Amino acid sequence: MESALDYYTARALLEWQVDLGVTEAMLDAPLNRYEAPKKQPKPVKTPEAEAPIVAAPKIDPVVEAKAAVERVKTLDELKAAMAAFDHCELKKGARNLVFSDGNPAARVMIIGEAPGRDEDRQGKPFVGRAGQLLDRMFEAIEMGREAPLSAQSIYITNVLPWRPPQNRDPLPEEIAMLGPFLQRHVEIVAPDVIVLMGNISCQAVLGRRGITRLRGNWQEAFGKPVMPMFHPAYLLRQPGAKREAWADLLSLQAKLRELA
Image (cartoon, rainbow, N blue to C red; front, side):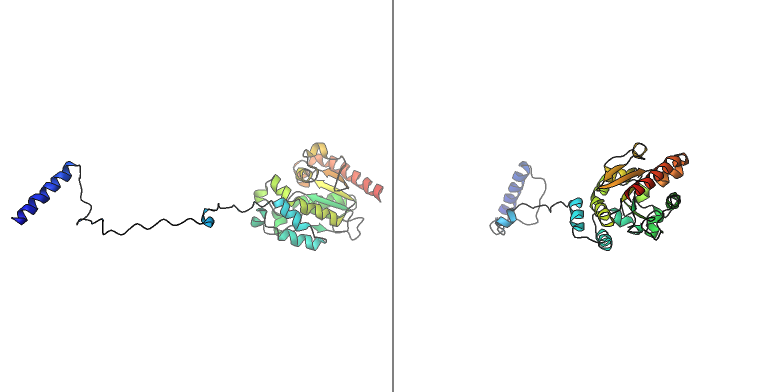
């Protein structure tokens, strides 16, 4: 009788649950909630846990570059500081640091734009076809990078020491972050005259572009007379512009005589 009562009672309870909408049993056996483990208390928040996450301060590459050259006094120190500068992405894709070529005691300092493929391979500025034309241009006024005397020698560097990918134009932020290195380079060499080859050099030093308007007109930067000229690579594409380049070279020669 007791087992029959249990059966009918269990069935009645089951039908009651079905009427309530129960469609599936989740456990094989009843769960005694009184015996279930108690919920773990929530962890107490400490001041350290509630403190906001502070983002790392953003690095300004220009400020870092200025700090890097602050104590630089020699060309060797400047080259080492540039080699250790890790804030320019161009460094990661370049083969070599292209620092300079020629006589550091030269009266004329030439500032080009950025290394190309040949310069990146050899680690020297202006060694490709444009460099060969540059040498012939200055040989025409009896000057060159191999000249032993400072009066006839030239010293060459670039706005950027690393080759941009696919020889693209340097970005404004790349020019800005490497500007302090270029300024210190000029201060150490202390030339009588600076020649800016092409638009990028004019942008970096004079803050202006438009080489067809700027070329042939003396400017001033770093406390020095500055002559903007057509880049030799442009002259290879536009041979007709060599006449203007020759006029600029004669103007340079006259300025050096004036300053002698």
